[in-house]
Length: 213
Image (cartoon, rainbow, N blue to C red):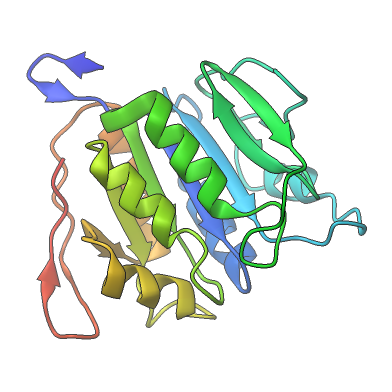
C-alpha cells in the first residue's frame, strides 16, 4: 500500500517466547487506539493450560484483542493472538488455524505466521522478534525480508531471554534492534507511512543498525 511516495507497513507480526509476555505488554501499551494496521502475535504457550492470554493482553491496549476462529477475516485495527495448540496462518485475507507438526518443539510457532504473512502481504509486512529461547522466527524474518518487508528484533540487552533476538541478528539482515518502548512508536509511524528514524542501538558486534522505512 502506497501513501503518497511512502510505503505503508500495516501488517505487524510479533513473535515471542520465554520472557516475551513482558515485552509484548510493553509494546501494546504504546500503540494508539486508532492504529490503522493489523497486529498478529504468536507466543509459545502450553497446549493444554488455558492461560487467558488474549484477555490479559487486552488490558494493556485500547485496541480489540482476540483469538481468531478458523477463516475469520483479517481486519485492520485489531490485535490477533494465536490460539493454543495450533499454528496461526495467513490465507488470502483470512486466518487459518492449522494443527500441523510442531516447529521448534512448539505449536503455535512463530515461523508459520511470519512466512505466510510475507507471502500474502509482501512489503506491507513487518516482523518483530522478541525475547525467547531458540531460533523460532529467524526463518520467518528472512522470508519477510525476501518479500520486501522489515525485520525488527528486541535489543538482546533488554530481553529476558536473548536467544531468539541474538539468533536473528546473526542470521538475518536485521533492519533495526530496538527496545520495547521504541517499537510501539515505530509501528505507529510505519503504519502511517511516515518517515521514522529511531536512535540506532548498538548490536552485540558493535555495529549500528538503522531502520529503513
